[in-house]
Figure 1 (tube, helix red, strand yellow):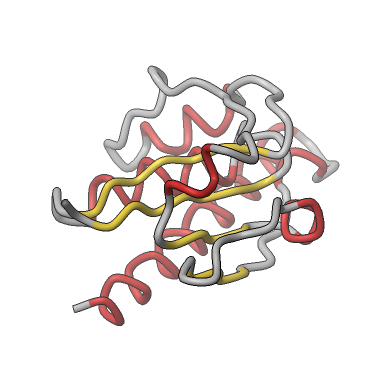
Figure 2 (figure 1 turned 180 degrees about the vertical axis):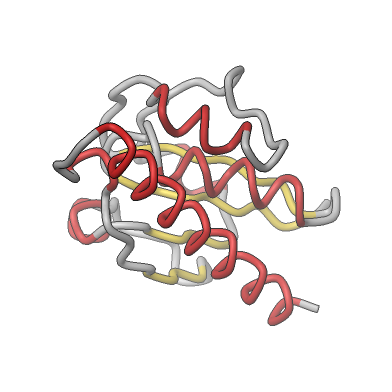
Length: 138
């Protein structure tokens, strides 16, 4: 069986959803990729749109909350915000934990086009981090 990777953020609405979609596209099938939140806030519609821009659909994803039991199924965990890192349940000693502090585009204030550009910027940061992470796994 392959490795299991979890992307974790607070609401599982935006950053972790984008990361899951990107990783599922870039990684081979021997890495099982999921995302979750310390809470479940529902899927962010702007995140869906910016992912569609790069031909990765996350519209069928579900926003889920991670349970203390479920988190132990993963070999690797990447937290995408300080809140998720701080609230992360205790991990098994053999679970690799990586933290990427990535800005939450959902709290960015500005005009509609500026907000959209912020989501694109965050998506592109996540894409690069996952691409670099994948190189490190190979």
